[in-house]
Length: 190
Image (tube, rainbow, N blue to C red; front, side):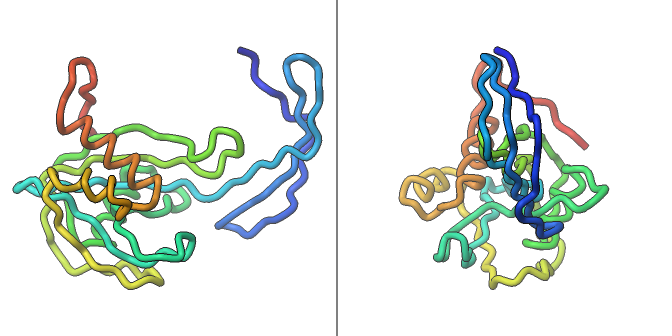
C-alpha cells in the first residue's frame, strides 16, 4: 500500500488550541488528485479505566453537549502542551475523580477517525485506584463519580448508558487486559 500525498493545504477554521479544519489537495498513488479533502484536528487526549482493589471501575456521569444527553464515561482529558500522555492520564484521573492509582498499563493509542484525523486517544488501565482527595476538575459540566463492579460495566455499555465511543473502546480494551487471553498481555508503565 502506498500513502497519499498532500500537495496543498489551506486552513479554513482555526480555534487554537481546540480545533483546526483544513482543506487539502491530495495525490492518490494512481495519479488522481482530490480537491477539498477535509482534515480535522482536535486536541489529543488520555482516557483512563481506573479499577479499585474490590474490582470496581471509576466512572463519571455527566452531561455532554455533543451528545445532548447525560451519560457515563471513563475519566478522560486533553493532553496539555509539553505533557506526555501518561502524565496527562494521571493528572486527569486525580482532577476529575480524586483518585490515584499505583499500577498503570498503556492499552495503546488510537486515531479517532482514520480518514480525517480528528485526535489521538491514549488509553490507560489504572489498577489499584484509591480515592485520595475530592475532585477538582474545573470542567464546565457537573459530574457524579460512580464505582461500578467490573462485571456490570459491559451491561451498561450494551444498554447504551456509555454513549461515547472513546469510553466504550477504552472499557473494551481494559476488559481484554483484565481477562488475559494468550498473547494479549501488555507491559506495565510507570
